Length: 354
Ligand SMILES: Cc1ncc(COP(=O)(O)O)c(C=O)c1O
Image (tube, rainbow, N blue to C red; front, side):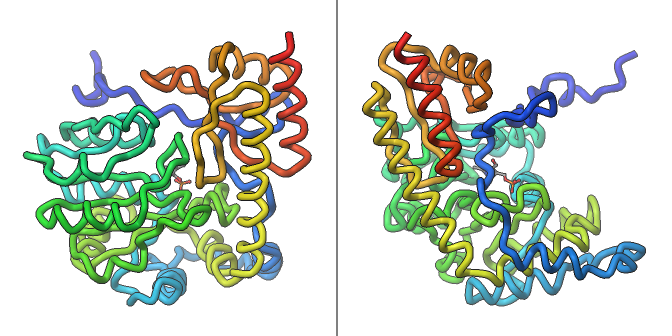
């Protein structure tokens, strides 16, 4: 007897980047932040009253929601917090789409979108990136029969952003469609349209504290948008699990979001390190896409993506390789500390030279 639903029998789940426990790698495979979270986070954890763990957390995470609202110049009614932005993005599917609706997204983008579409019975319309791996806004202006659009901006795994102006043209020309903008890497770029959610009832922006805020292990993400959209997400959440953001996560997230200066500094460091690394890789025969994220996507003129991935891994450096169409020649490399990038480049040099 097979007790699985037909849907589960046919689904191909998302493969998360490796989190190896066997040995210590220079870990550049899941776009985590190479620096620790703000010192305010450590202080908050040290001072946290463990007695509070006896109780359930605030199901509405009012403190966190109000800090996020303030940060974006919005009302708490415009904010929905969740257990990582993956959870928030996933909840968008049952909240806003019905079975057999069509959702559009780029052919090369965050591969979880197609898994959620499948999970909730949606059809996917894949919009090809151009030959330079850019998203063209003109491809999204007249999509027939589509109920929603998801745009990852800057895109992953390419790192390439779409300009704010072009993105707004998509939102404006599709008032009948929900446009979800996944800004997981938005802090490293200057393409965020988070400050425009008030102007467009069809725009939902999803963000995370996993990348720029160095809190991947705490699991915190959020959506901002029109109250009606936020209410839709709350409906789904309250039909699944009342307590998605735990008390410890809420406390550390509030502490992190309060320390703008610390994060501005580490974002600058990561962006500078990215440019340095990209230049060095170009000198070693790589094509490096112009990234505005905390990672780069690069392919070598001779060596295959899988060869680079395996040989780096053998030598203790973990990067990400995707076997998918169009991108199997590339590896995605998270920007680490300057020491980690030195190690990466010295290992790459050895591979390229023999
Ligand atoms: C484009 C994109 N969106 C969303 C996420 C999910 O982030 P989290 O669930 O950690 O907030 C990731 C994580 O790698 C990502 O790359």
